[in-house]
Length: 489
Image (cartoon, rainbow, N blue to C red; front, side, top):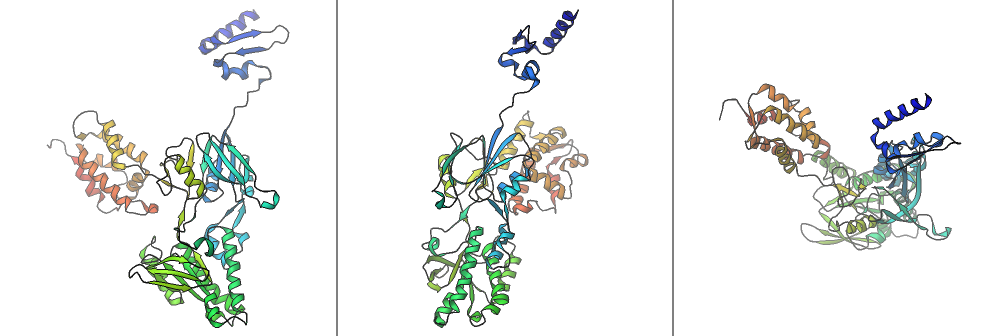
């Protein structure tokens, strides 16, 4: 009776799982264990083996390059424990970079804007391994990273090693763009890392200490205390403003004999500073600089740096000049790091200025590699080409009109591919474009609808990335032109 019950249960199991017919089951008399053989029986190994333990499946290895904003944000939102995560970076901390100008002037201490990356990683619900090293080569074909230790050389030289990956997240940021200007690398100060801010702060103090010596001539004092900022972007403008506040409020008390000789000059190749912001902000900043006595020179391009002079050229007149300085800060934008340039050549992106990804941040032309942050840019799909493809999938006949059901399908596909369209619909007076179907009867003219979408798409492209919403006024009047009432020709 027991044998009958066992075979009855076995028969029901085979009927439920036909693939078990391929399993060879061997019963041992003494041990009472069952051994299963066959590739088809892997899901059932835990059931038919001794101990009841499931074999540990190999986790995919995710390697993150960098500890900046992009890398830290990725690690913060990665909550799955199904990956083996490793971080590789020459910097073992995360830095709050917006406060770097404050560090240079002593308003904020460097230790106040950094957080050890190991502290951040220890708060994650899963274990993450960190290696303080620099990746100098990415071998995408073999999914291997070539790394070099970042410690000082008195520990026995540089150590080189390799790291394998299944998924690679590139978030190494960027470096300062010198535009191959002679002398910049040798004489200019940058403001990209915490070490740059500390070095800049020490040089600033040295300038005032040297100018305060009795043997230095007045002419030399003026040169030493002339601080030149190259670049009218956010970093350059903020540093110039912070430096002015420090000179007026703090240094005047510490070095009263030479404080009146300090001068700040900001050089910008464009017509205005802060070109990426609203014109009202630009005008306010320029007026504020003029009121504070900061010498703002727009349309002035730097052609060369020497140990004591900045060579300039007026963009409008072509006139060349020379500005003596004691400290020069270079803040003119960013450029890809050498490892990214080498990687771009490997995958056929050598002609680009930055690593290209799709809208899902996957590197184009490379498998299992993602890039985010300053080292990459997103190649947006051509909206109208996608919309034409959507129409082709929805409309099966040769007519040029959509019925209500087809129109709903089109709108659903478009908003799924382009969330900004849904954002536009929510913020416009028409909360949902499909609601127009309840207001107007008949069919939709495809050509007029595509034309309306094209206008919306062009409006979005002209707006900043943080406000990709088309103008609300008049949208409903524009949208109603696509509807063809019933019975009309």
